[in-house]
Length: 89
Image 1 (cartoon, rainbow, N blue to C red):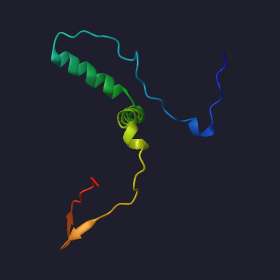
Image 2 (image 1 turned 90 degrees about the vertical axis):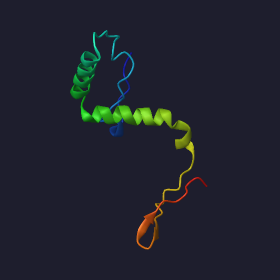
Image 3 (image 1 turned 60 degrees about the vertical axis):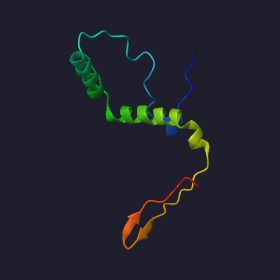
């Protein structure tokens, strides 16, 4: 099998790393588990964290992201104080 050549805009795209990345590991304490988790997260580059969280957000909010959105930002100020708007409508 030959791999398809990557397009120019896909050359530097990071893919999320999920699946068999973390094998089942047993710990004797929560502290040991937290230390291992912190070590793994520290070894993962920031760009990979961004790719992972972007993938997760796109999966979790797939239906909401399909809906058309108003891309304008609206500010409501009363006497110079920002007021939150009801965006449910």
